Image (cartoon, rainbow, N blue to C red; front, top):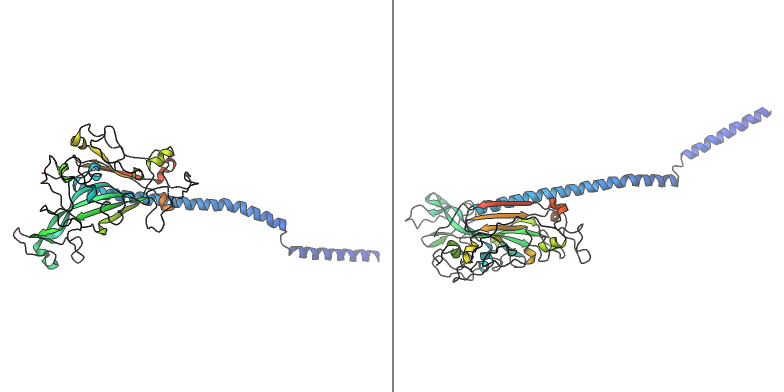
Length: 411
C-alpha cells in the first residue's frame, strides 16, 4: 500500500514537471534577453551601416571627380582647337582698357565687348571677366558665287549650291570666367541650373558673307536648317589705321565701324545667343581665401616679361586676367582684376607678338556633390565648405595647354 502511494506521487510529480516544461517552451524570451539581443544587433549594424554610407560617399566623390576631369579636359581641348585656328590674340592690356582711337599704346577693346556691352550670362562686371580673346576665321560652305564677276547668284537658295563655292568670314571670339556670386563665402545661389562656384563662357560674333555689296546670310548648319546674316554687334577690324605694328591697330578695334569706316550700327547690341556656357564647376577659391588658410593655389607661372618700355615691354608674356605686377611689370600694365576673379582657375599667359598662349584650368568636383555651406559662425570650416585645400586636391583637377596660333595677320 505504501509503495503504491509513493509510485502515484512520483507519477504525479513527473506529470506536473512535464506540464511546466511545455508551458515554458511557449513563453518566448525574457525582457533581459531581448535587450541583450537588441544591443548585439545594434553593435553589429552600426559598423555595417557606416561602411555602406562611406562606400556610397566614396563612390559619389569618385564619380564627381571623374566627370569633372573629363569635362575639364574636353573644355581645354575645345579651347586649344579654337585658339589654334586664330589669326590674332589679345593680351590683358587690350582687355582692360577702353577704345582710344588716337592712342596706339593705351587703347584697348574693353568697352567693345561684354560685360560692358551686356549679353546673357555676362552682364555684370562683378561676375564676368574676359580671360582670352582672339580673331579667327570661320569656313562658310557654299557661301560665295563661283566666278569673280558673278554678283547675282543667291547662294542662300539650296538649289544654287552647285554654283557657289566655300568662303570664310572673320569671327571675334572671347572666353570668360563667370562667377556664380561675387563673394565666394556668401550664401549658396538658389534657383540656378549652374553650380555655386564658377563656369567658363564662350562669346562669338561673326561677319556675314558679302556678295556684290549686299550682306547675304552665313550658312552655319546643313542646307535644310536655319541660316543667318552678320551677327548683331559685329564690326570688322581695320588694318589701315596708323600704327607701327599689328598690335596697335588691333587694340583700336571699333565694333561699331564697318569696312567703309562709317558707323552704321553704333547702338547695336549683341544677340544674347552669342554667349554660350562651355563648362561648369570651375573652382572659385580666391588667393585671399587660400592665403588665410595657409594654402597655395596650384597655378602655371607665366614667363617673365621683357624689361622694355612702352609698347616694347608688351611684346612678351602677360597674364590674363591680370592679378598684379610681376617683376618686371609690363609698361603700361593692365588693370588688375578684382579680388573675386583672382582664383587661378581659368587664365592664360599670352604673347601677342609671338602668337602663343598658355591656358590653365582648375575644376571643383566638390561643387557637384554639395553647395558651399558657409555662414558667419562656420566660415572657416574645412569640412563643410567647398574651397581648395591641399589634402583634398584630388577633387580639384587641373588641365593646361600651350597653343601656337596657326594663322597670322600681315599689314
